[in-house]
Amino acid sequence: MGLPSQPVTLSVEQIEELNRKLSTMRHDVNNHLSLMMAAMELIRFKPDMAAKMLENMTQQPPKVTAVVNTFSESFEKTLGITRP
Image (cartoon, rainbow, N blue to C red; front, top):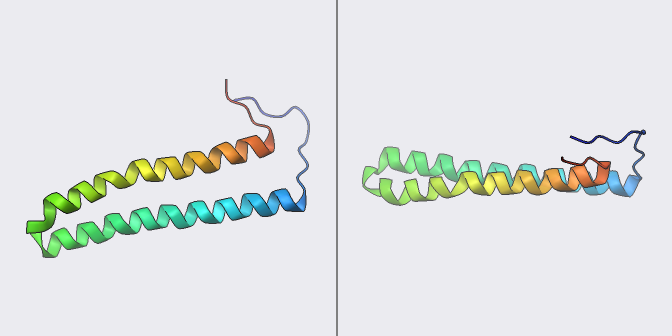
């Protein structure tokens, strides 16, 4: 991973933007995890809904990955971090 060779200075606006994006990422990840937990609880009490709820649960991890990747790309761009 290519880290900057000099210290990085961020403006207040850049820090504010990163913080907003971090907050959005946390919110989105929590939402996807909540959907998974709700689906598991529903399966526990209504086993006949397992197929539908399992489909819902399997859709969530890629969404979490996408949200984390989006934030990571923005974070790395702001800090000047490059990938080989």
